[in-house]
Each structure stands twice: as structure tokens, then as C-alpha cells.
Length: 285
Ligand SMILES: [Fe+2]
Image 1 (spheres, rainbow, N blue to C red):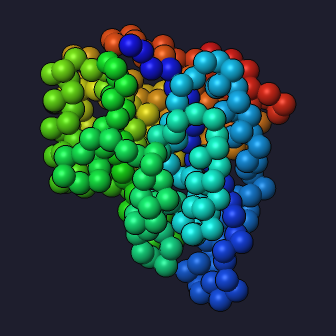
Image 2 (image 1 turned 180 degrees about the horizontal axis):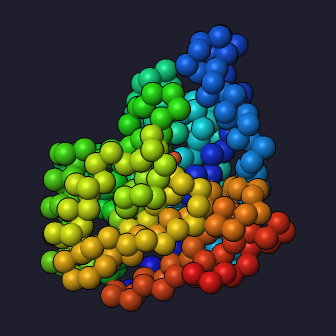
């Protein structure tokens, strides 16, 4: 049994209807609201819907979103994204990004889980992350790197206990012979992210992959379509980043994009589609 799915990321759907006026007078939130309004000009929700439509036409069975579904972690944004995803036409898997985890310095993991719990159902090792969703011979492994960070910082971390659980999950699923697809928001490869934008414990994440391996690692965060790799016990593990699924940019690598993956046990096929201003077209992956 195979799995055919669409990977998108960083859709940043904006809904400020829940922002009460006093939020604008709170210094911490003001800068973020301004950034979100600026970002709104760079993103178009309709492009995301076109990506999903294209994926459905190409036979996708599932939509995977690797974080930053919102901008400010506002209740109104979560409600908006939830309503969109519930009627998107495909089963959905999500993990949180840094934008889904802040408001006034409080980690809004509770709000993320409450809003999107249905998209993160799966096996767990005694904690919310990682979660494992099995589809025949394929396992999607959802990791959270979302931590509350200071304004203008967009760092992430997996955390020691979480990495230990991931280690065990990868070992077990590897022993079962499943194709392990790890999902995390931040790029886990050194030198990819800008400073203050990076995964703080990527070296430790890399050690887990070197020890246990994985068949594919997917991320977002950088709003760029990227291909890197991490060393695994039996060779390099492909690490694919995808640009924002709502980007209006025409710049190479930064145009809106989605990947279509076909996972057949030990064979993973990827097709990359990029937005050309009017439609999504196949690109060289
Ligand atoms: Fe991000």
C-alpha cells in the first residue's frame, strides 16, 4: 500500500478579526501585528487553495502542512485555518511552526492542539510529540519545534526528552520496515537558516538521524524550496524544504510551491510544482 500526498508549508493565513484594540497598544504584539499586515501583501490564500486543487487533480490522498499556518497565534486565526482545513477536500496532517506558538510570550501549544487535534491523531509515546500516523508501509512522524521566542527571533528546538522519544520511534518503525517520513518546521541542517531563525538543537537532531535513520525529512520555515540531506546509518537521508504555499513572489525558490510525494515502501518519488502567477506547473525537483 502506498501513500500519495501533497506537502505545503508556511501558509500564514491571516485573520485579524479577533484582535481587540488594546492589543495594538501592547508593545510586544504591535510589532507582530505590523509584520503580519506587511506579510499579508506577500501572501495570497487563494494560491494555497489552488495548490490543494492541483494536488487533488494529481491524485493526492492527503495534505501535509509543516507549520506556520497562522501569523500571530490568535484565536481568530486558528478558527479561520481550522474552518479552511476541515473543508479542504483532503485528509490533513499538520505540525506547528514558530508562528503558531506565540502570543504575549505564552506558548499556545494548547490552542494549536485544541484547534488541530484532529489533524494530529496518531500513536504517541506518552507525550503529544512525536505523533505517528501509519498508512500501510508509510509512517508520517510529526515533530514540534515550536517554542516561544523573543520578538524578532524565530528559533525553534525539539528538546531533549522529545528527541529521546523520536529516537525510540524511529528505531521501532525502522525495525518494522516502514518508510519513515519525519515532519518538522525548522530546517534541521546547519547553515540553512539565518541566525536567530534556526533550530537550536539541530546537532542533536542530526545525531538521532545518524543513529536511527529516516527515509525522508520534510520542513518549511525558510519560505524557500530547498534540497539538502543528513547523514543516516545507511547513507544520506533526503531533507526537502518547501516555499510558502501562499507566496506571491516570482523569485526562484521563493515562488509558492508544493511537492507531490508518492511513497511505495522503499521508493519515494517527488514531483515539485511551482506557482507561475496563474497556475501551478511541474518544475524540476
Ligand atoms: Fe517559521
